[in-house]
Length: 424
Image (cartoon, rainbow, N blue to C red; front, side, top):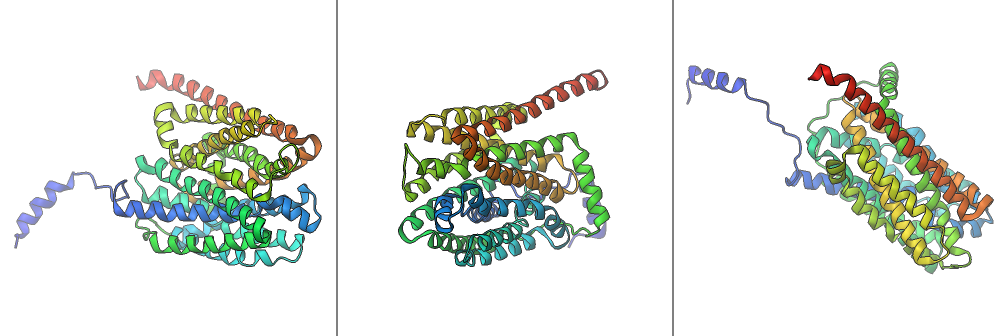
């Protein structure tokens, strides 16, 4: 047994060494479990949140509703999520990210089993709003969990996998509801989504490791308000929030209306085939997972320029009346959107030094407000000017992203010139 003097010498020798980073690193079993768990959570989130989107023409027919009215089954869910994400993220600061994500997913799945029983459009919209509010505890808590538990250099890749789960959830949910609805009706399609999400929730709970770097905070409203003001006063965070909202405005508008366009002449596609169109979400899985590499090669703003250019090209290509061109346009829109979203959301997590849950919650709030606005405005634009009206709305949002990113580039250059002589 070493003597007291030997232990003292060893302690002195190691006192100056850096503390080892115990956060999760790629390639470890815990990192893989975390990635799979949050992939399942992301899959369930988008599957549930947009479960009625591919069914909007069928919902319109069942209740005798216009596209604008039926679109509220999507906008109510995303709007409620946007409103509730900040207060629920505050609860996660007190009770833990893992507990909040589990409670959020459990409540959303329980509501998913009730949604197919809605007797009218009003009750369907109300249930969907409750479902969106329940899901609000998951996205921001997931990003805060990753920011705390994963090593910084692996953060963009880990969040990219979470976003990839979003894209596969959005794709599989719409694909599943489309084909099930064609065979057994739209209510059966929604029931199938509920069952798939239940499996994802069980997998999430079984796989996700306990948090090792979470420190409980307080529920003080004053502290929360101060943290929110600090984040909103940060110019970079404010720009990232606006970029997320504008990207999602484009995406929400396009995918809320595309079912109506493809159901009409000259395409006249059946419900199952329309649902299959959402297979293009697989492109989003690839582009979001590659976001970390894009940032490494092009920088954050360079990656955003590439994403927004791809989205704009897709919008213009989708104006064609040839189905292959429309599909190619959707591929580009989807790739650009998911890449832009992954870049912006991971940048938020890296930028915020304190109150990470609130920083991510503000991003998610802006993001889903953009989705809600895009779905409603996209339907209105479609009524007013057809698909060209929806594309015009998307291009205006894209121009907003370009303007914000250009301003960020200019501000960075001015700051670099100001600091140059001092740092030299």
